Image (cartoon, rainbow, N blue to C red; front, side, top):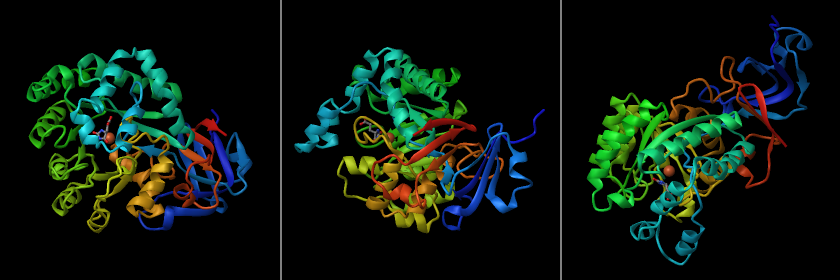
Length: 410
Ligand code: DI6
Ligand code: FE
């Protein structure tokens, strides 16, 4: 049996993101090796345990290029049919997201189109969005349901999400978001819909093994804290971890509720109070920042970044890719917005799309470049890792690897 590594990249620079303090975990004059989908070496080239040519079956110099962990987008709604460019126009003419939702547009209009699409059509429409994220360095992706809102259509969405992972060779983590909006057939009967989610849909989705986690939209235009709590209790009974769309448009106590149930993450948080921040810190939940939605909705209330920092709540950044509030096809662009709009530092933003995003998904095998971690990594055309947050648009990836295999080359 060949014990040599599958690959060894020499003369590279690493932003390992390992360790809590050193800037980006930078290692200059580094080498990077992997075998069987796991990192075997990520350190100074001078520390290689032998002659490079004998160590691996494939050895190559990168001429100083940078390597980071594969990016992790821990919050997307990228499976949907159609788009909502018409609503974009309405908002530009003064309608608010809430006005549009109350008038029967918004999420519910994506539900109509998503229900009408076949599974294959939904895959064909969604796959290019996942490809766009991958081309920009994403190797692990969370995808939520929530545009089906009945059992068959939620299952269809989750199956499409799984098929995206299989066809692109990246990791897709699925999240059941049945409690996203009340579908038209339950209009005026919100609590009956919550019954349907808790008694029928969630247990069936869990039994089918189609969800890795459960989410809810806790908001004055969506589900109340007590309805959300019911969904969470059901999730827990089904053995699934939870996360929450919390305090995006108003302070509903969502962060505190997420913390109480030990959520993996609480996401958005624009209106979260200091008590909510303290609760997240105590629970060890990740705060997921979604600046694409903040930007798209032209919000002015910033999430409490400084309080989150002061209380040492881990910060993640995600695209929130969805047809209504964040038609954002690049996680790198979300990092730029996190810096410019939320005043996160480039290092915080990059940690937020790697190590802290992994934590938000409950994944402890990735997010840094360290021996033993998954060999998900990206070779970038940059001079410093801060550039991943600095450039707006463009193509910066040279190669994207997942599980030790090359996926995208430019
Ligand atoms: N919050 C959001 O930003 C998205 N979902 C949610 O709960 C918006 C989804 C949409 O408008 O389609
Ligand atoms: Fe969202």
